[in-house]
Length: 131
Image (cartoon, rainbow, N blue to C red):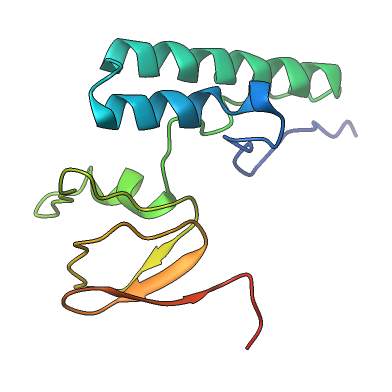
């Protein structure tokens, strides 16, 4: 029996090294109006190529795009459902892996890894820190 190796999770979109931050920098620049959707697409394409190259070097039989274009698991799916609308006010951002409570109205940016809820949404805590 031959087992096929693959990656079943998402690939890190943003690494710690400066050269691994291009998607984040381009997304921020696009939100400021300094970059276009095409610029963001090119940065994402480069990140996908890097994800595939890493998987090939690791010897995986089935490679994926690493879900580079998924901003988070909720909005990627919810944005494709009928009757669901995701709105983002200008200048407001939700950081990587932040959690927003159901029905929250986010009027201020939520930092990465934080939990926010309420109307208007307030940051509750940093999920990386144990209480």
